[in-house]
Length: 193
Image 1 (spheres, one colour):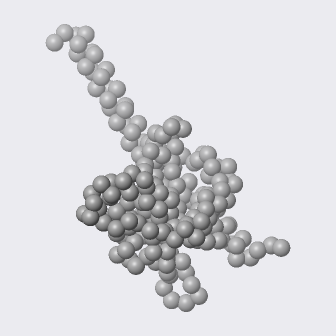
Image 2 (tube, helix red, strand yellow):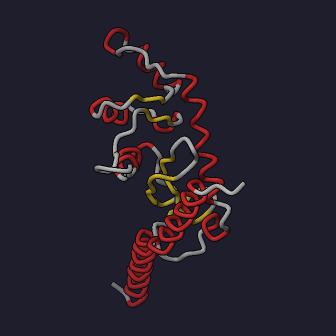
Image 3 (tube, helix red, strand yellow):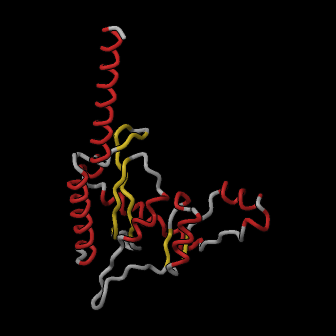
């Protein structure tokens, strides 16, 4: 091996080390590459009054469907007495959350799924014939109320720091999300006329 090839190999090793460190820093900051550059994604659950119930923060390239169970696991609604309620009567979600695993999780916990089936999933089910199972149904009237999540996100994004994620660490960003959600909850409990 010549001196030049040894230097080139050392340069390659250094570049690999720098790339690994950068990936580790981005993962620790819950940042990931998406079409918009370095971003993060907030997965959340909201009630019918557009109040946030639970948050999960992931890198921007993370898919929605795998986060479904994690978000539902964080839902805790306190009542006047007793334990907090952790299981809703029904869950309305868009087609991104339509998967066998999510539907099985909801069935296992006795929660009504109001999630339409994707066109490709319906076609695959039909192609399998009787082995494909029954068609997925959902309540269209309840599905119309799914926009409460979008309206909740718009309320959260009223804070510019949360809309653009100025915070460097995921902990400080989640603290901002929690603070904004508590303000939304307080305003909903004490409405001003």
